[in-house]
Image: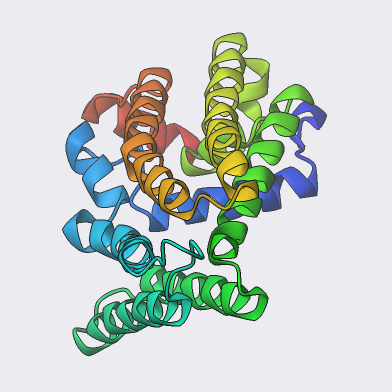
Length: 251
């Protein structure tokens, strides 16, 4: 007979599975015996992931900046957008040709192309960063709301990864840890939005693009490390003997 306290709402199960699955595909698996540095490096995709994440935005900003007309304060938007999208296309083709995982590159290409299309449609270079602002707003809001209502998204993801379901909610230590980790992620997205939104509204394209890069992976990587270390602390890996005994008991 199933204990009613162990029954989980369908929504939390689905959300936890989705978040946990995404984390595992990104290489964030707390069950893996690996160093913090290796895990973070894998999560950001190594050098290839860094280049795919940074270069399209960097190219857009650099080309726009060096082509700005001092009289009109306008750069060559078509050239900047075209080179940015072209670079994303190259990255995707390289992934496909080498038969490596192309999901991140394809996602990056779609995002880069959509941003470029919006900027070209409106004629405002700053609009190249609209989707990034929206993403930060949505992610930050989701993290904050989930923590405040007692179902922090980090907890749901980790619960799925660790086969813990939502039982962590009965453990005060885990509940508090996942609450503050989720709040920390919400703060990261909020900080990006707070810094970038004023620059977007005043169309300071060079500063906006530069800070987007500076507040991207350089802030994401430490947060991944802190989250992973916290999770490993909450779920210490059992000794082989204990693990086998536990597995036999569960059968």
